[in-house]
Length: 333
Ligand code: ATP
Ligand code: MG
Ligand code: FE
Image (cartoon, rainbow, N blue to C red; front, side):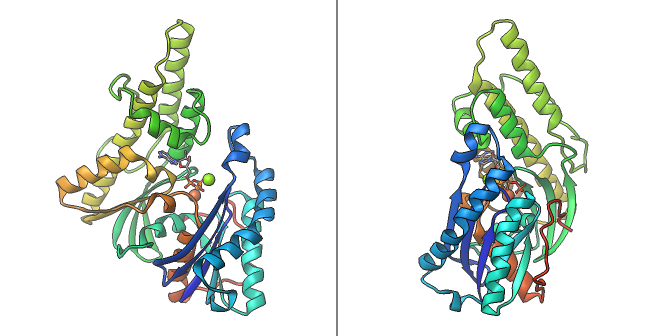
């Protein structure tokens, strides 16, 4: 079964052709980062317009790169939420129209389920496992019981991790998006220089909070700047990153022990973080857990993860109506 997956929930216009939910035949990503960079974040209206301009070419290129035509596509899948409503509508409408025009099934995909499904791409990794999802707008620890069957064990009470990375990076003058910049500069910083607060660290609590951490970093920065102290950006970045990695890695491991599941994985943009990967690899080895990391290109937004989620929905009998609307605040379930 060949699925065309379309993703336009935020600032990436992406289309991908994936076979049987696992074999990526093409994955075309047109990122608008350079357009939004000058505003320090994604401007929804500009994102929608750019999706409209890009979507036709992105889909066509995904077919060409996969060496197929629309006639070879069995199912069209597109993200219908959560995300920016104007952005979502572009990919969703395009996907529905293609499916209608070709007379093939259409499947609306939950973007967060897409991030989790990135774990199945180019891989034999399969449920059950415990997954940390850390993206620009979401932070969850989820028990993936089976394809499409989830139990949320913990979630953020305020900011998502990616949002915290982006805001701290902005305060440090590192630019947008902040995650990759903090990841890079932290390599030359001292992670023990500052110790910022950690929330909800009591046993068997898998929730997070990052707004206190973000505020603590920003307050400390202001204090040093006011006192004329030369700020060491790398030390700040490294200390902040280490705090997030400490919290995520210990909670993910604890959640796996709590559920007695020996397989763990990560998903979402923050899952590209190199310290997080390094730490989890070491802890998983110590515990004798199997750990899976999706390739970095599958961690940030892409059509391949949407095609995979759409495939596993489809083979379990889920098909969406062509009246499916975008749902900006769609929950995981
Ligand atoms: P959501 O999926 O919640 O709707 P989104 O789609 O905008 O949000 P993603 O594309 O999954 O988010 O991830 C983008 C986020 O990942 C940004 O906040 C970015 O700073 C962060 N990020 C990317 N690379 C890294 C990295 N190496 N380290 C930490 N964070 C990173
Ligand atoms: Mg993005
Ligand atoms: Fe995302």
